[in-house]
Image (cartoon, rainbow, N blue to C red; front, side, top):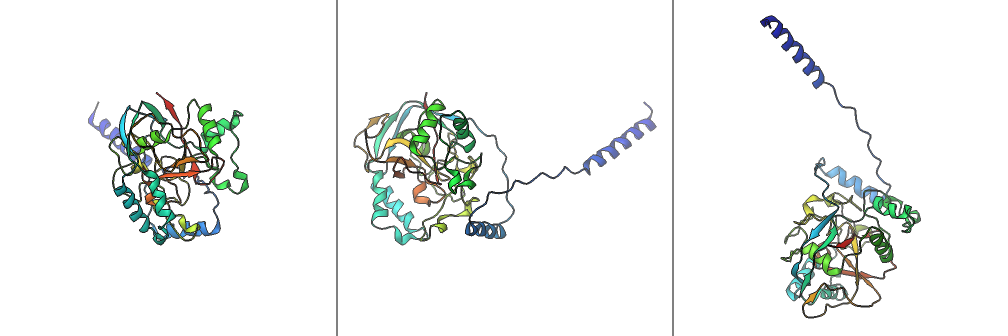
Length: 320
């Protein structure tokens, strides 16, 4: 080809590239945020006013479940760790509340004991509204009572809440699994080495969707992690365990299979299932209304299995 022709082609190509570079992509339609109570909306607006522009992290969604390999770990807490939890509690905004009953509540992590678990699968994320609604559509699960004032939690990408223990167990069986045992949940959160938090030994307020201990119920909400209430599952990548499991601290506290007892049995155990009977079921993981001492992997909660809370959900497990 002649040099003049080559020059002409190059010039045309440059002009085309320049034209394409100046074409802007059409603006995307913003999704309207769910309505919150007036005070909560004010808190969100104040946070946005003082915060820099958000950074969006792109990542692969990950597998639906994670295989936890067989092995032993130390379940529960020593008296030294419980004293540390009490210290963390006293550092909360309403730390003076951390006396008597609140301090004693951490004692339910006694006594530390060796537990051996066989291989098991555990869901990578908490069960979402979208997933739970498939069970509702199948005629197996009951519709959560969102219509009774919880409409803002009815979003497909967030954990399903306002579910009882029986609701959670029914869904897991329908999905081909079961609720994790308390021992399985703690092993997933703490690892074989006994991490304090799912991501490691040191607390980081940006690794979990958490709250704080406060004198005012609404002030328990803390948007410093980017979310005032529920977050879409898997939003806080830095809080993921080394095994790849999301949201084992914060967002929603999670129902597990076991009946509650205020103290673990002494001695080692293999695949423990908890007490044979009881009035309450165990809850794990803290939530968006709880502060850092309750986000530790060893922290335990408990409630009536018929109760429903806006900060409570679940995930499922399966035998390997």
